[in-house]
Image (cartoon, rainbow, N blue to C red):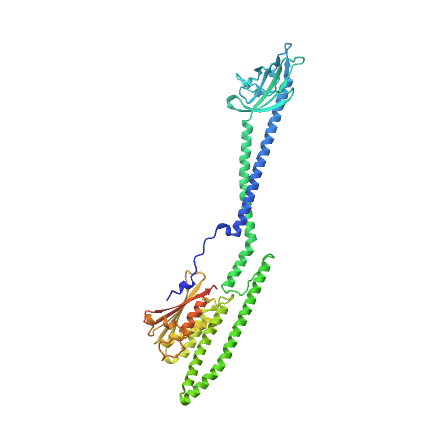
Length: 480
């Protein structure tokens, strides 16, 4: 006999990939979009700021070049002269200040003489620039290295002395870009930190938005769980307009299913009633003939009528449970049903002085099925226990821990002779009776086993500590 708990136990829920979650998909798509947008915005803003700073830096340096050009004079011999004191920026006079000027000579044959004139800030070095063909008054922009390996932005233009075409002069102005580069880096770092903070805030906003948006689905899930656990027969609640049509359709399906099952049960009951009436007539007639002359035909008719009744009871029970098992909204109070059955059995077996003891949990237990089916199963177990008990029957009911979906166990103990291991399977077969002196049809335990299995449970028979029989059934349960 297999352990009944193994019938109701379901495999452990498999871990699904993260992106099977609608919430995680929405969040991942939102975060990815935000991250791409903020990265592009960061690069764009950083590039705009860098270009703006360089333009401002170059504009300032252009002014310095214009000032140098304005201060340039030529001697009668055509040599350039610049009054350094007339240049107003004090950095021209401070060695390696980061602001430099220089005048190079370009001969008519392309010869090049560097540092003909230069600012005091260059001290004892000259700017080394490659030869460059410049149109008169045109300004070229370069980047090169300067004193102490500094990075310089260089502006240059070519001028000629009035009336002298034998030589041209290359005016050079250069400035250290270190401070500008550091400013750009500070801005870029601050921008990156700000965008990261903004990304975090937007992610939290997206999480809140997704949570609020999916909240109706969680409400729908709770309502479905209530239907599954028989707290209600229909989906209850007010849902958004996008979800409400689905809820209405689902409720219509539940109502139609309930109507179909009710019609099937009614038809099965009508058929059973229609068959039992002529069978009762045949049984009565056979009994009368059997009392008169002990006719073999009458005995055979009576036996077949009883067999037909057993088959009707058996298949009627199967049809009833097959049509109603796990029907949404079904819930039966186990304690109330057990207490009612105990009162009935105490009256039925009052002449034998059987004491029936109840051991129920304080918390209410609910069977996820029809009350009539629970009456059928527990009534058979109690009646069987009272028939065989010597003085005492104990009925206990408790939840089964660790099972999903939830289940409950009802156990009926008696102090009777019990059942040998060799006959334990036999008593669960239809129509089998180990002792013909005890009244019955032999269908009781078989019906209990069949009904319990149809509900996803099982029946187990064991010897108890007092030598009698313990019959336990495991059935699906619901919450409060």
